[in-house]
Length: 217
Image (cartoon, rainbow, N blue to C red; front, side):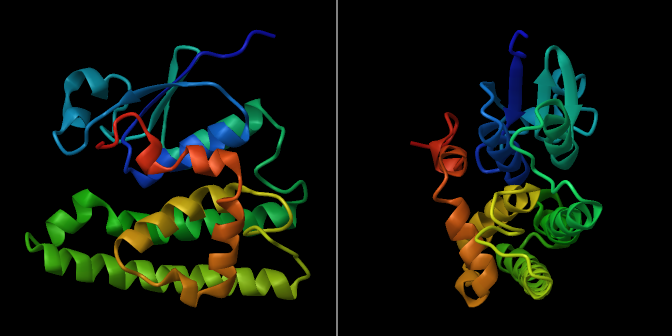
């Protein structure tokens, strides 16, 4: 079977783009990078909207077909390239991992999004206060969910078990954001341990924002 041609439209510091880079790396998939500068507003251009109607990143073009929304893209990659799996085989485990994913994807990340905090206030200090409030509480919930899984007998070192899952795919970019915002993630021992375990893997290392071609040098 011929390898698919994959192009990732994203931004180096975008948490959602970061997720997709990790998933591509875990699947061992080669891809091209097409940077979209969010600061200069390239995502708002009509030409980009033809690929991504929501005018957001990431957008993954897989064999000529565009896909948007990072979690949907991660699930697409997992379905088309099942090994290694990013979700457990059993329904209970899949539900637990999906809950971890949505705790970050739906509860945390939207409230730290650049578009959102700019609507909250033009004052950077107020923006930071808003974002860190919601990120801190969301991360505390994530920690509690890892604790609950441990009580169910799920052994790490990753967010859910002995191999990385979609939970780690979304966790690492969120921890990177939290560190940049000055949030002490080391105070959440299970979350911090899962982050450290993931960062030992090449797929997570290569996906780091500072290693992307559009990152400032």
